[in-house]
Amino acid sequence: MESTLRRTWSEINLDVLKNNYEIIKKKIGDNVKFLGVVKADAYGHGSINVAKTLEEAGADYLAVSSIDEAMELRLNDIRMPILILGHTPKEQVSRLIEYNITQAVTCKAKAVEYSEEAVRIGKTLKIHIKVDTGMSRLGYLCEGNFFDTGVKGICEALNMQGLYAEGIFTHFAVADEEGEEDLEYTMHQYKLFTDVCREVERISGRRFEIKHCANTGAVARFPETYLDMVRPGLLLYGYGPYAKQMGLKPVMTLKTTVSTIKIYPEGTHISYGGIYVTDKTTRVGVLPYGYADGFLRSLSNKCSLMTADGPARVCGKICMDMCMIDITDMMNVEVGSEIEIFGEKNSIDELSAIAGTIPYELTCAVSKRVPRKYIKDGKIIEQELMLRM
Ligand SMILES: *Cc1c(COP(=O)(O)O)cnc(C)c1O
Image 1 (cartoon, helix red, strand yellow):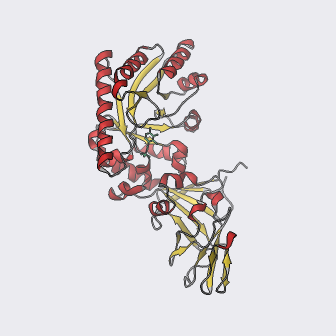
Image 2 (tube, protein in one colour):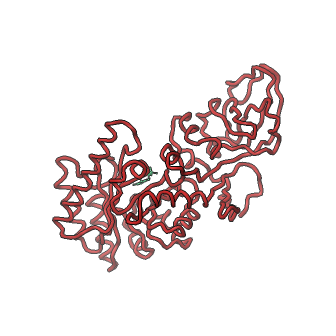
Image 3 (cartoon, protein in one colour):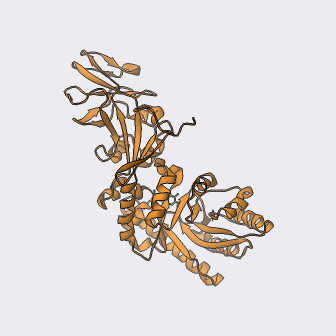
């Protein structure tokens, strides 16, 4: 369904995505597989079109956080391997197998459940073992005194019927932090992970096909951690300092238009709470973009959006459906003019820093009433309205 409004929309440039993929692929080399992280609807970019682009470009694997996200891809003809990073209830094991979806196994209790279910239906579930090396979230705990029990637990899972452990992985907690201690922490996590892999392979006498750990920070900074496969998300979408350093471009541009222009005298209170008072005769543009579209209200009065005449300050509180900008002296900005909320001209990195958050949160926050335009080979190939009509 196409949007009939020219209100606020995102442009998802699949050519940029493909180019980002190719730059990263060149960096990691031919011997390292590429897993594209497409959880959370591909960080708000639309997982189906992102997955199709990656599949065509030659990526090896995808990762999502739940079986619903995996099924969305399978039911839309994505054939490549998909890894579920999060938990799947054991009742869903037959569906995982039927749709050839790989499941992360994070502890003994899960391994037992999945094994029992797989045996019950007489089939084999493909799994990747998750090791907790310091993220302190999911995975077999292997730190310090837990090394032997962790290794033992993983070896047990390898011997369970109905499970085939294709891979093993861990997740870095501070690979994108610049401090000396952060560097040490990541290197410690990496060493622990490779120690666990080596010990499990020694005891079990078998080798994992795919060992992986490198997220965005590690892909950009630590080639020694690539192992068999890398697992970037943010980098692929072209955000953050490493994307910039590597010449990657933002895949999403979020745009809105000026719906109304007003001229207010000095001393006018603008928007809820009246926190912004004009200090001169002020030309104000009203934009149909508010916190229900994903504009964080904490950015009220703090940031600028990009017009054809340069950055325009957001004035006063951001409302649910609208916000206001100061366009005094920006005479090229008229009713209907396009405004870039974030993209190549208005950096999402700066916007998220002002909001005290990270780019991930801003792209994930774009809400379902914001339609997407997908661009491929320089042309709009699809307009996607997420509302149910
Ligand atoms: C989200 C996630 C990634 C990707 O992280 P980025 O920082 O976006 O590269 C990789 N691995 C796991 C386990 C994740 O949950």
